[in-house]
Image (cartoon, rainbow, N blue to C red; front, top):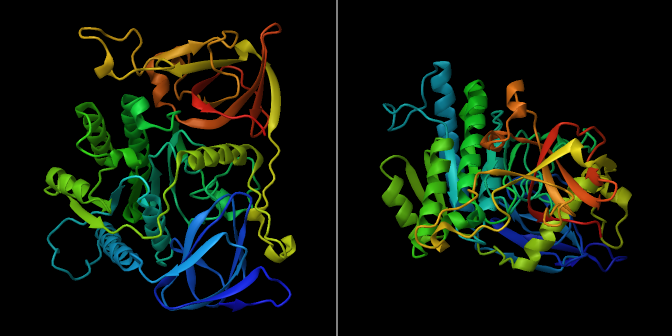
Length: 493
């Protein structure tokens, strides 16, 4: 390590040996600038171009890995160290196995001779991968690495990345599950955009804004809040994803990578009700996305359980957890959720470290200023719904013989004038209009099958005038539209 710029105490050079990685963690308010001076390096499978600054901010925690060795320049990290103990060999081997499945599947579709191998008699299937693991195991990192390696393979693959973790938010806001075909490596600049940003009202010239995810609104960070609703949304998402891939042979051959919540890997020694919900949701993913490969990240007991349940139908593989995974506390996750919501409406801005000018960075992805629209609308213009009751105890907690007055899947109309509506400062999902006109007049469970077209924040409610103020990414009319509330709240700082 040496000073790369005598005029700046913030600039350092790190010489990384082959197959090592530089790990860093940022404190609140800090940012990090990285530039590759010599050699090749990557962040979670996305290659870093030589001589270009990359910014990281908003308490980002990541690692820069090199296969052949490199020299990188760093500016003002908070915590940093180099490790030569990485699981990248195991992850690369998984990628090669998935790549072989892609090539065989596409060759079979085109009627070309299959590559040589011991499984010539087996009908080639593209990889449809389910990644499971406990909290803080690095599941999303594994998914990003496998996705980014596929897009860099030079075969034109566009793997379908599916995020079923509502606490993460994916490309939109926390509380959603979503899917998108990935055409270029996913960046890692901020936990506010863990999978890159999607097209909202941001400039379309940005590469990251070419992503158009299909999203469904769950509305809560915890799966246990309403597992029946999560089951239905997963199956809806899977149906749409498979329908899209059925008409796209190249995309179908690229396969699917499904990221999951940590609750899918909760200990089987938990209560029977929790275990049943967990197994049901894993089964929903397996069925909805026609999973044929399960990767278990660093959890021996879960691996044994998955082997017992699914090894006769598909491949189940345990892969190591990276030693660089950081334990994330509740307060950190709450700050990330608030930053994600702010980024959705106002864009992502990462200020360069002290001593580095904005022009030196020169990347519009780090300086996206959005101008959301604030509209005052009458109460009746937008219909608000809640799915199930606001607070719902698990079925096991009900008295013997008792039944619910409102079930978990029932849409309940909300009156903005009611003190218990919970709409003030709430994040609500604006549902896409029904495909068939006759469905527009139905307010039953069919609204659960509608994807999301955007998100709104209710910033003010004026009961005397029966008007409320809505913050939206772009101006427009909401007449006749339906919005669903969850448990996320946000207000401008």
